[in-house]
Length: 437
Image 1 (cartoon, rainbow, N blue to C red):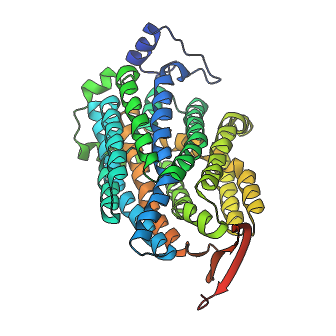
Image 2 (image 1 turned 90 degrees about the vertical axis):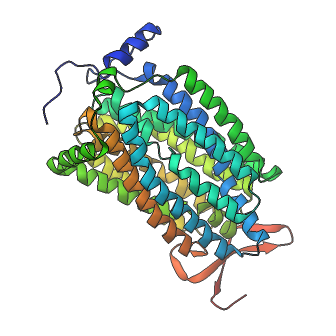
């Protein structure tokens, strides 16, 4: 691959001109590339609005609403967990097909119209989920709108790749994106858990209202991150673009390995996340507010890791980002093992906090995946990575749903919350041998 022109800025000329006309300037980074903070502010704002709307409606409201509908149809906790895992697997399979199509389309038509379409579809999805009265309708809506889902952040990743040069500046830009996501994860679960305690449908209506605001803001403020030169030059068909990307990956084995690392990471995290809400509720007796508080801690830790820990680690591992990714992935694996062995809620909270460093692998890994790929194929690459990760989540969701009624590491025993007169006695476990009521 031919090297980029020396001294070229991190932003494409049309976008940089738009930013300068808006009266903002980009500050330089240590590598001499332009920092995308000014031009990317609308992207952060749109991500914050739409992400918060999505989390309010989906975490933990989606799982708890599904549980309500399943209980009304006579399903027990174990059958509900299996059905929920399978539903999430089907949704992931739909996204696996749709995400590469959306990113290829954004390479040809631009990022902005595709992001607006996905945001509008998300608003309609929330409204339809709120109005669904049966388990079948609820699941059908969830699966169908996966065709226009950007929940995996593939389009945001292409915008960042369009606006930055490979290296530490791109890692920091991804870190800022995940900081925004961390803020979303702080507010969303708390609000969603509180609204769920009022009525299972309220979070979906609230999310739809907030997402509508995000659509209008994006239509008003979101710029086009795909340069006019590339926009006019996108005459390749999807098949030829995919072939070109395949050639790039064959010429860069390290990029292929980094994509594989992303896939296996998504597999492991997906297996846990698919049944996390039901696990917290059934094993530890968390109510909707308790689940929301626990998940909000994830957001606080993500903000701290991306805003405080990641810049220091990037400096310490300068030129050795692959080592930083390895450290972060091992850190995450240790955290998940500790959560699976948690005998009490105190252990649960401690393991979650101790795992703060694991998320520092995400931003450098996304940078390494995009580093050797030319600008013309960034959309195709984002679709490939997100699609492969989504496929891993399909497998992870099925695996997680199959073991969720049991202890995560002890499949021979069934784990249930211990209950007394005052309700669940949190922090205690009871292991019942098979056959016991």
